Length: 115
Length: 112
Image (cartoon, rainbow over all chains, first blue to last red; front, top):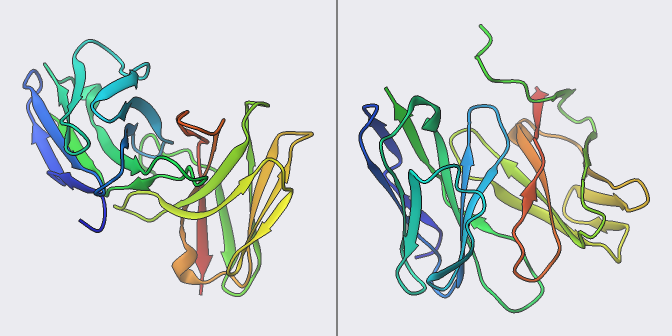
């Protein structure tokens, strides 16, 4: 597609339930990133994929968080046993590799609310 | 009323004024810097970038200044318009495949 697509755009879940958030990067973008943004806050790095491997997952806040990516396409961020502090907007970004422009293209995010 | 958790620095300007948004970055090894604009309910959008071998770069109505000595980055917006109202983030990285590290953001409010 023309941009980074994330689904769902909004998700309300009960505390303790598992959720899956999906990201479709721009076609041909080999690098994919997940960030978390709490209300009124900056962007908190979670995990980075190069192809389907994750060379940097240092930002995942706990073992309840995991992510995977199929080849150089879709990525899924899974949060198990959700807690209220997980409520945030989860942003996905992708970037082509090679060249000299290191800027990311972001999706519109998934707003997760844990009640 | 005030929303819990909102504590972004805010810059309020009148339409037509010039705006300057500042950012202090943390890593002296960073060699690439970007400014992003985030409107309500949307993901951050690329505005302009600059490499560490430059101290100024101009785009359409925007200028980014880089002072590596004091690790300071600024974004200047000329003739600010109501559509410029958004949260602005600076971001840094060390090039290559390293991840971008984002600053806390500044909210720009433009009054007509």
